[in-house]
Amino acid sequence: MASAVIKISWRKPLSGASITEAEGGVSGTCFTLASGHTITCCHNMSELFVPNQGYDQCKVFIAEPAGKVTELQPGCLQTYPEFDACLIMGFSAEQRYRLSDNDLGPASECALLGFEANTAPFDVRQVNGVLCLDGVQVERSRQFYHGMVPKKRIFSIDAADIKIDGKHGYICDVSAKVGLSGGPMIDLRDNTAVGLCFMGLPADAHQKNEIGVLDIRQLPFLR
Image (cartoon, rainbow, N blue to C red; front, side, top):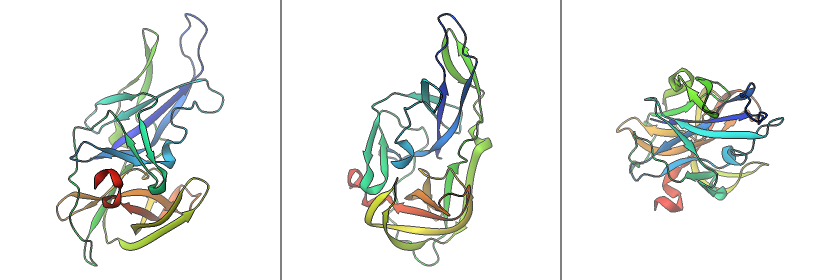
């Protein structure tokens, strides 16, 4: 299963005061392989530990579908921008995927997993002056699209947030909401991980018609 990356920003209260205003929600998706590597998209993480505009504090969490919540610390990200990929160091989800050995042909059905961005399937509370998530139910924000047959594609992209050249991947024709970036593409024949969702088209629309997927088997840290 995939996990949700959640970011919360707030203003630092006066000494002894409670936090009265905070904002945040799902920032992206990540998933863990059987090797223990946890992968997400690089472009999603560029300002992950920077408070949202108008705030001066932030925290980042990973929420797993079973309910476990882990706080991430600054410095845990190892980025590979030439693949728009990112390793989250020091975290591995309990549920993991084997890396696929399959070649995806014209009859290979796959699934995409992720969480809708900017949703907030949780409450925020303060315990002894520390901000915590409460009542986390990421399944409320889950996206699961299955049955599509991906089309092979070579990606060369020179955009403000994504710059990759000659990378192997796939295009999936699917109507999906923003937030899949960082999530896995799964081969439904044996439930193995093939790809990393990293872009959706139209680029600035909340509802996407196509999802671009990078083949993770070309990532240097998985070879």
